Amino acid sequence: MLVLADVGNSRIKWALVPRSKIEKTVALPLPDELTVIPDTWATQIHAWQLTPPTQWVIASTNPNPALTLETWLAKQGFMVRHLKDYRDVPVRLDLDFPERVGIDRLLNALAAIHHGPPGQPKLIVDAGSAVTVDWVDAEDKFCGGAILPGFRLMSESLHHYTARLPLVKPTHLLPILPPRNTEAAIQAGMLAAIIGAIVWLRKKYLQSSRSRAIPKPSPLSQGTSAAASNLDAPSHVIEPVCFLTGGDAPLLEAHLDLPVTLWPEMTLEGLYLASRSYRIR
Image (cartoon, rainbow, N blue to C red):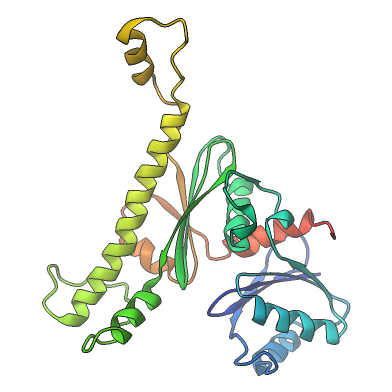
């Protein structure tokens, strides 16, 4: 028996792995304070009939609640492992500063590599408090990606930093365009910002990968014809497969005109895969 915990910025997700795959998941609240444990945590442990020394594996982008959970579990006699950075995730990286990347992004990449088609790039969109649009190349290297505000952050920023704009919650319904009221205008703007970013980044990531795949001119090449033939050479980089995860992923799927795979448990699946190769250090 194994229990996984993905500690995010707005909630904690637990997953139950009784054998070799995730069978149950639940989203639970974060603690209000470091020492105040939500009643739902104990209730869920009872509901899943978890008893020590059941093993837990934690990963987090939010260190304080993760430490609270780890300490609380350890006091009850559970075995707890905490995956904290890139060294705990078996993914090859092409990054300037590997120590700075969020472990959730690497866990998503691991899941995509393990379950996605081999030899094909992967575009991974994780839509939570922030939206990450990440790229795994055709050689299964994690190449990083963009970070932008999620729906809630955009809406709260517009509300708090202007005098009259209301707080608007995103919906699956696309407003009539062009928008004819303030709420619809904000809805359309948030959707356009995130969906437009995904489409643009996908295009640019693919262009960058293809430019790297174009062979360099031979030193023995003469004139412009050889260079031109290289520029016109067929690319070996094929279209990426796109994964969507995170709390707002269903909303994006409804409006994104791309073939996508919606995978709510993607980060938890990556956490499970990483736990199988984890080494204490």
